[in-house]
Length: 194
Picture 1 (cartoon, helix red, strand yellow):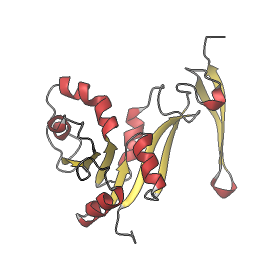
Picture 2 (picture 1 turned 60 degrees about the vertical axis):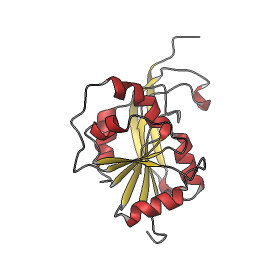
Picture 3 (picture 1 turned 90 degrees about the vertical axis):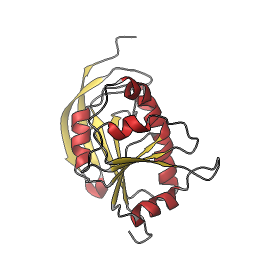
């Protein structure tokens, strides 16, 4: 990249209502599509790791580092993550790294990406929530957004009026001019509440 940083891809699973929680993600498909990016680094926020830390700590020991896997870089400016060994041994990543600012400062994401590029990273895939994704977008550090749209509604996005548990069946998809895609879905199950 011209500014000395890797190509940054945000890869997100979303429901039709633009929520990212409250529905079952097809993890097999999500990560099969993620593998197509051939990332050198998987970038996550501390909150994403912390949401899984209890299950990591209670799980049987993993197979160990994956020499062919990407580096896992965790934005952990407040030093909250503690499951470093479990992450390293999970079998997905070749190694793990904490990205931290000086003292209590936030991580300088631009500098962190430049450092990763200097170490040979060409592609960074962001697998995180809205905090990190929003920060990267505001700083102009995202080159590509990949959305895996699931035929469901999560915890009730704005257009669903708070309805939860909705499921949909794809009727048709049609690419349109200017990068638009027209998606048509049938509602196959609804929220049982009135």
